[in-house]
Length: 433
Ligand SMILES: Nc1ncnc2c1ncn2[C@@H]1O[C@H](COP(=O)(O)OP(=O)(O)O)[C@@H](O)[C@H]1O
Ligand SMILES: [Mg+2]
Image (cartoon, rainbow, N blue to C red):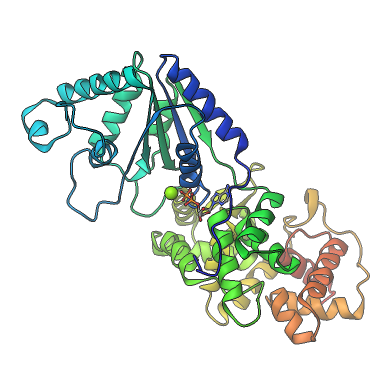
């Protein structure tokens, strides 16, 4: 993060902190319990955990260990060794390498429980293990063992994990579902921040209120993810004048591109075609514009969905990009000319003999020619060429906000829910020639 930004004070997360406090009370009373804390990358799992550990609502011994990615040779149970590192040696260091060599796994696990039991006689223990999506199999097995076998100890076990499938990490959702099936385990899934909380966070980080346009851009692009929002704020303020819609900063672009790069070439193609349509795309339009045989198309779509790049919508008719920034990064990958070519295919499909009803609310085609002002027609023709609000603003010497108002009005008049649909409807109705 940019040094000119301050570390913002904690916003929101009160119900989560209350819940953690309650679980600590349960553990203190002699009923060991565990909480998993999941959420997207950058949503604030670490911040919440540290906030809790730094201000424990009752006396307890806090132990923290973190899992790191496997670039180094693995050290068995490294996160737990880190967690116990600062405790005085009570002669029962069950995680010492020599011990691990000579004892069976079951024995090591049992002795760890005994150690926690012993510590709990003095005061309750909060044992936190961060980022278990990076843990190796033996660490995961040990945590699962602890969840089921800590009953009689005064332990609160906290496990944080990334619920997004990141490149090179295992999909931990089945594992966590298995853990949280246990009666003593609570699951916290951190949601993005709401707009008000995000605005407070941004103002706090900036050291004062920020411009409305910048606040709106950070909100729309980050969708409440605090890490993304702070990166965007830093990037916007990096130039001489704050630029609300600055290009995606390298840190975030790399993050998004790493996800897109995990896809095979067909899936990447389908994702690019989808990106040209907007954040959301109808399946039928996508199928027509992608130009792939059905089996290949579905294989590519499965891949993009499994990689959590595209998400099928509840109505079973369309897909959307899982995050606005993923869409932005995929859109930015389109080559000059490619965007217009793909938009042309969408327009063809929509204006063909059996017009797709997609992009028109409730599947009802717009019944009559909408009345557009000359300015709106100008804006519409730029929308149809694939221009962003920013491009339109530059082209017509109007503010981006005015461009966005024109686009909203045009969408409403055409009864379209996306820019692509608006362009295609306009072609079909002969509004644009
Ligand atoms: N609730 C919050 N209030 C203020 N800042 C937050 C909050 N949640 C996260 N942040 C900030 O956002 C950034 C990312 O949070 P972090 O906890 O590292 O995310 P994660 O561990 O989920 O990847 C950090 O700079 C953190 O201080
Ligand atoms: Mg973290």
